[in-house]
Length: 391
View (cartoon, rainbow, N blue to C red):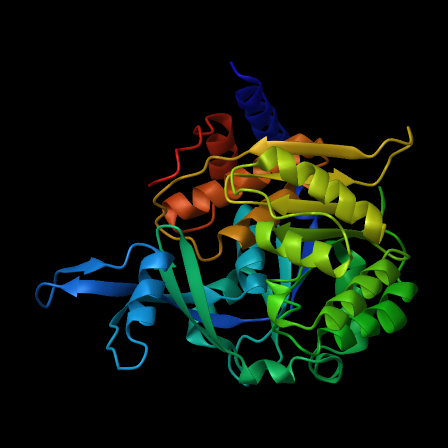
């Protein structure tokens, strides 16, 4: 049995142990919400039923560039619609595992949009606004997300206080072991929400038994935001640390973006260089003085956590069950985030928490849905080896 397989089996055992106290742990996730249309781009159409798809982002790019100076017709086939947004996907994963989940975000107003109906049956939901819309163009080597975001302007602190109420919000946060805050990039009023939590809610809460609350933050591809805005958000994360343990989650591209804003030497490594991002996670964590930073390229993940009683920072990396032709890739990172947080809530060692994160994502891209706790533990116990990258 390889070291990787042993770690995965230990993680599976840890998840099964956590099942006995699963329902004693509640989570609050927010604050976005999208209706995702999962789309295939047509390359060559043969008849009304059969076509060849555009397999790679590079191929689509070349088709678009070839149309410069003239015109072009690119056909999109909507395969299906699903709930979307970093927050709803992460919360749905945690609710599917069996945690008591509350979600606050843009799910439809005054009525919740039908695409979120099943989710709302498994989680307590407060909706502040209509959802955004995303056309998710899926390819073998990644995805291109085309978003319509106007409705998300209504996701702000005053709206949250009006719809949820500060007393109710305090009650929810008081019970929560995990707070997940996602999609800072598209929610342009997020800093106001963070300041409201820091100044008006979190100082009034007692710490839960057994340790401090965990705040997990996903910026969600901040490249379109100004460097000064990103730097201001990073300073706010530092203010959160007075009240909660902050873990910043980044994909490979995001780690480079944050590193550049902070003036750090963290070049974006090759996607399969999981070892390289371990030092990236440590460098960013130390610069921001956060509890933890996790970086997840496509092939695995690495993380760094604040030094413990022994004075040494903890770092780890894990190669996940990469699959070259996923059934669904939109939401893979959000499922990773949910799984990694699940591993931390289960008090697993860092390498095992990374294993749970990659396994949660690996199950999702293979099955096009999130796993139950039993399914996730079984998948970890027999974790597939990573597949080679397709040509």
